[in-house]
View 1 (cartoon, rainbow, N blue to C red):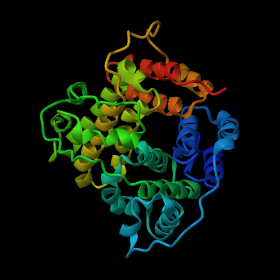
View 2 (cartoon, one colour):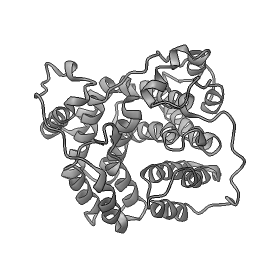
View 3 (cartoon, rainbow, N blue to C red):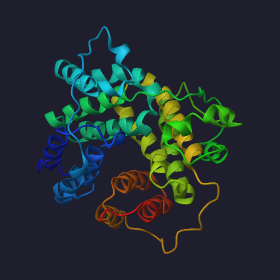
View 4 (cartoon, rainbow, N blue to C red):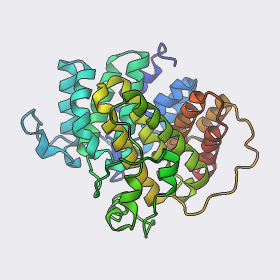
Length: 351
């Protein structure tokens, strides 16, 4: 990644002057999208993209009351306290190494991974990748505080417990998930239907989680990301935007694993699976689309350039994850780049 030009850090500093949401509850995707653009060789387009995107962002919400080490539980899941949370995490990462803060707070936040349609954990995954691979410059550490603060403010447990302890692969488990009765709903209303959806808990619990084998957990999480990307190619049209998160959320967790104690990996897989499974049931299409015409062997660099020109933040994020999957495949993976092309087709381009 081009980490020497300073473009990513400049973009993050610009974005930190805005709140994490706009229009009531829509997530600010700026930090995630600019990280992906820079990583995939599109640094030259970052400020132009941000100039357009920033026109819909809103100011940072006013603080309400300081959060302390003693009373944080009372503020967990309260979106009105998002600026209080960001300030709290900014203090923590100023006082302690960011890895220590992440390790302490990850298990506290993980049960609320579904909050804000998984955008907070995705934001965490993008910045942790940068911190691990490209350096710990101040704007990046500040971005971690913003991302964790957003997660804490939008912390939302699923309304049904998921305890995966079966034998199914991610492909198999995704295939048997039942759909909720009414998919024309906002995410929280869709999640609320899960407890009453016949067979959902059994299907969600069918995934195999190798609890005592951290490396096997990593492999299973990578398999989940791959399966979700492939399923988007065929079933993403149920909701082209929200189905993106079935892949990008577990990929964010996968990117974060190297920064976490290994004893947290199995729970991380379980939570990532629960979130991906829930969104799949809420928004996945019942019938598969026909194969993508003219896909053939796609060049990853060209696919990402096309997504950058498309301009939609969800398309950029989906392509970023799809290319991770393609790059990790030892024997090639034409379906992953094709899923990115599908996202370009399903989601309107930025005009």
